[in-house]
Image (cartoon, rainbow, N blue to C red; front, side, top):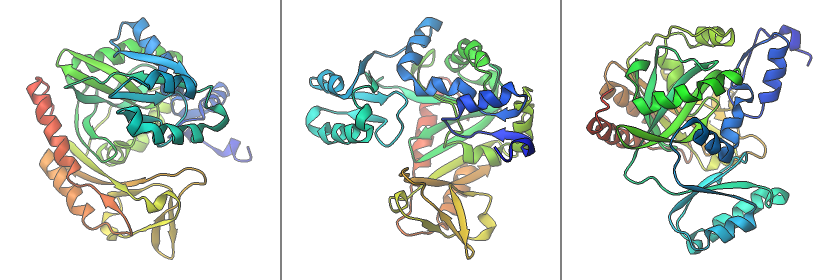
Length: 358
């Protein structure tokens, strides 16, 4: 690499660079990222087996290899979730209602997988009914976690409402999962952002359903603004230091910006300059003063950015995000402000569970 000697710190926000990260670390380079810990996200079936070995609860599931075996397994099933190992895209996870309604989804998945369709590993999960979804959103440093962190509720692909809190106050099932996975994370030399998704049917138990070994979105956009010195924390984590995290405000909210147009074409986005820190645009390109999301070749993405709100109360943070969202304009943009109302509803359910962090 021509720039190899000039780089002081390598920051990896996404997947597919685990071996390269390890190569850099082996040569004494500072790296912020999951390293080969990304395998915990890639290989879902293997991860479920590992959870069992660690004594963590696992929901009922089946593992099959190949699209033909998947069709055979699904033919008499209804209301299950299908997830793919390694493969990422629009159909990496989908709700299978029945064969009649989902035949086109399976055809699309087979087309996307191409020659690998019969080698692909699938996990078929039974739903966890009447459960609240929450998870850990924060840094992990060789299996250690900062004493303060974010905790939030995500509305899938729409929004997020979070609070800055003491790690010790997090739900016990969440902390138990983190603690049991700590040795694995240490073996991977994991030094980066780490998010988990857990579904909790009651206050004393939650099932870890997915791990995100990258800068999850949400809540990355809100974390960058909510945490007091994000850049300094990145440096400390790359050195293997557990940072003492502080926040600018106690609460943060995030609304996802979506555009079907932007899947294949550049998307101009307009908003007042005063909101520059609170409107985050992926793949940002500025042309003649106009900010644009630019699609990557071969990667169709509808979730192109986010609007962020902060406050000393959750109400303030949500209002700020909604107010800014009204000022964001662009052809075909969709910003679901009421997603934060849905998040508040889930927060109320948490409170009934005895989890009163908001």
